[in-house]
Length: 354
Ligand SMILES: C[S@@+](CC[C@H](N)C(=O)[O-])C[C@H]1O[C@@H](n2cnc3c(N)ncnc32)[C@H](O)[C@@H]1O
Image 1 (cartoon, protein in one colour):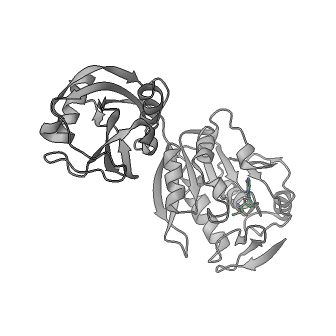
Image 2 (cartoon, rainbow, N blue to C red):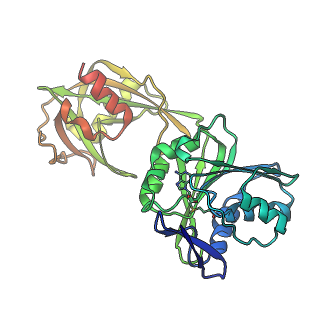
Image 3 (tube, protein in one colour):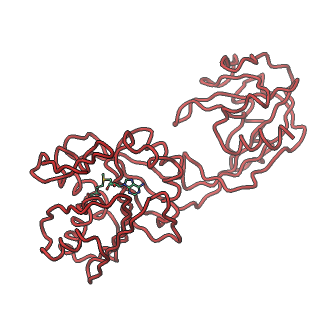
């Protein structure tokens, strides 16, 4: 059951009983759609070729209608594909469309003209398989994370990313931090943009080509059945990791790991390499720089002097002379569940535990 609701700009939307939310902003449905999806989405796609849109949540067809009207206005072809799990037979009025065009949207049947190709799949986004990168813009218009948390997860954004061209974008009215973190973790570069009336911000995320290797070197320092870990404040929040960092031009990974230890631990970080432990064998994209593919080398290192830091899980400490903001502790392998990075977790499970 759905109820019609008049919004702040005089345009109409629906209220979903199932999810307890409206399909658009009550401050102005059409103004919101025009701002988020047309101005920050369609109108930003470079070039003059056809624009391939994928919409999550066809709903009333308002976004599709505005996209069609935009295509007619600008003369640029739009190929619109949408998925909708719970179709509704209500259509909203869109200025710029003929009655016949509006009726086609309401019917939700496929359509193709020189300016607008259109296809709605009835089904769940979670079941859509993207084969090949063919989407220029994703209109991510699911209900809010509070109503549908399952659609704002990393896995969903990863799957969508499989279908988007390099440089393609995803636009959404939602500015929630957790949703943005999920996009970032799925390899999208996430930016904020001013929101439509009644909302401070919206989100624009970009799919970037992976075109650089980021080579890193880390130390596994193992003593008395415990390995040295460090807690660092990273852009996404505090993260537990193994000590080490990026290899610089002009140095080898072994030099890099010893240099990093000296930088991070000061005098206490002086030590020697006793062996190679692991080199990344699987594909990992950087969550901090989506254009980077991470390749990490891990070495066993023995420190010259014993390092006196705690073994208690929640009490890592600073080391005098070490880098500010870093907190250290010795951890048993089975206590390494909080490692932040996938390669570190792989090492804990398959190298240290072996
Ligand atoms: C905010 S409304 C979309 C409004 C729509 N874009 C418009 O212009 O009217 C969210 C839509 O997502 C649909 N939806 C909910 N769960 C879904 C899922 N798992 N897969 C696809 N669509 C879903 C809802 O039925 C609803 O139509």
